[in-house]
Image (cartoon, rainbow, N blue to C red; front, side):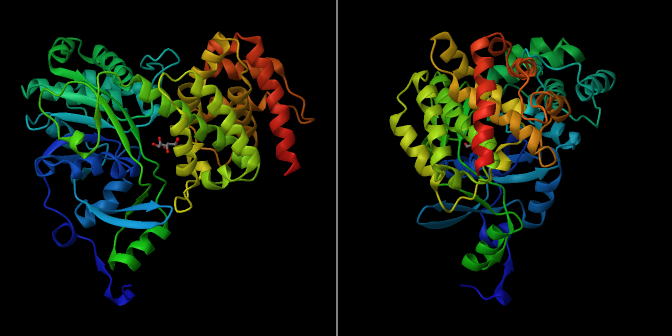
Amino acid sequence: MAESTDIKALHRASQGRPAAPERIIHLGLGNFTRAHQAWYTQHAPDAEKWGIAGFTGRGPKMEQLLDPQDDVYTLITSGADGDEFEVISSISSMHIGTDMAALRERFADPATSIVTSTVTEAGYMRDHNGDLDVSNADVAGDLARLKEDPQAESLTTIPVRVAAGLLARRDAKAGPITILPCDNLAGNGKAFRKVVEQAIEGVDSSLLDWTRDNVAWATSMVDRITPATTQAEIDIVEQAKGWHDNAPVRTEPFREWVIAGQFPGGRPAWDEAGAVITDDVTPYEQRKLWMLNGSHSTLAYCGPLLGVMTVADAVNDPTLRGWINEWWDLAGRYVSVPTDDYRKQLLDRFANPNIRHKLMQIATDGSEKLPVRIVPAAREALKYGESVAAPARAVAAWILFLTRFTDELSDVNKDEIVPLAKACVASDGSVDREAVKHVAAYLDRALASSSHFVDEVVAQIGEVGKVASAR
Ligand code: CS2
C-alpha cells in the first residue's frame, strides 16, 4: 500500500498510453462511456489508430476533471471477490459539450468516421410520438439560431448540435460518417436519425440529400453497470496504485455491446475486444432494456419507498426480490431469446457487494425511462390477456415515489409529472382513478385505454403503499 506522501498525480505520459489520432466523436461522455465504449476501444487490437474526442453532456464537469490528467483515468473493475485497476487512455481529447467550434472542427475532419452518443433518453428531445419536440423552447431556440447562422455558437440540444456538425462536414466535403448511438432506447439508430433529420429539415433541408448518401445510421445495445464516482473510488486508487485520480470510475466485470450497421469510414476492431456485430439488435435490446433496465426502474421506485437505497440491498430484500422475479416472469415471456441464464446472471450482477449502485441515481428521468423499459412488455401482456400486476406495480411505485421524494427527484419533466402524480393520491390515502389514467396516458395512450391496466395500477398503489407503511 502506498504511503500518502508518495501519492503522485495521474498523467498520460507516466501511467497511460500515447493519445491515438481522433477518429471518433463521443457526445455526452460520462462514467458509462468511460467504463464501456472507451474500454472496448482501448482493447481493440488497432487501438493506437482510434482516439475518442469526448464532449460532455449537461455540464462541463468531466472535461474539468480529466483535463489536468491528460484525459486518462483509472477504471476499477469490481467483482464480488475484489478489484482490478487499469488506466484507460482511449480518450484523446475532452471538450465541454457547448464548445461548438471544437465539435464542428471534428465533424469537418475527414479522419473522423464515427459519432457515438450517450446522451440519455431525454437527450433525444422527443415528443410523445418520437418526433423532435419543436414545442420545446430549447429546441425551437436552437433551430432558429442555426437557421440564421450556420456557425451559431450556443446550441444546447443534441439533435441540433449534430445537425450543425453535419452541415460542417458537408461543407468541408469530409466524406461519409457513421452515427452509432449507445443510449438505452430500443432502435436507438432509427430514433436518433428521426430527430436529427427533423432538426435538419428545420434548418436547411438541402442537407438531407447529402446525409442520405453520406450518413450511415447504426444501432447498438450497450450494457455495463457503472455507478457514479464517490470519494471512495478516489481513495481506493490512491491506496492501491499510489496515484491521485480526479475521476476514477468503478464498474462490474460484465460488459456487452451489440452493434448493427455500416461503417464506410472503418471502425476499431471492437469485435475482437468482445463486441458482437449483428444484423439485428432487437432481441438483445429487448432482453437488456426489459429485463435489466425494467427491473432497475422497478427497484428504483419500489426500493426507496421501502427504505432500501441500493440495488444490492434491494435484491437481498425478499419482498423486492419477489417483485422483480414477477417482473422477469412477465417480461421474459416476450423476449425472443432465452432469458433463464440471463436472469440468474442479473441476480449475481445486482447482488455484487462491491458495486454500490444507488437507486436514486437510477430513479432519474423515469418519465423518459418507463416508456422504454416497462411499457412495451406491459403492452404485450395486455395483448395476450396476461396479468399486468408487475408493470402496474412499477407505475404505481413511480406515482408514490413522485409524491414522496419530490425534493430529491431529478427528472427533465418534473414540472409536468409531479402534479399528475400528486393528483392520484388524496391526503386520506384514497386513490383517484381518473388521475391514475392521466399518468398512464402520459406514459402510453394504449395503457391508459385499458381499464384492466388502470385498475391494476390503482390496486398496486394501495398494495405498495401498504407494504411501505409497514416498514
Ligand atoms: C440504469 C442503467 O441508471 C439507469 O437507468 O438502469 O444505467 C444501467 O445500469 C445500465 O443500462 C447498465 O448497462
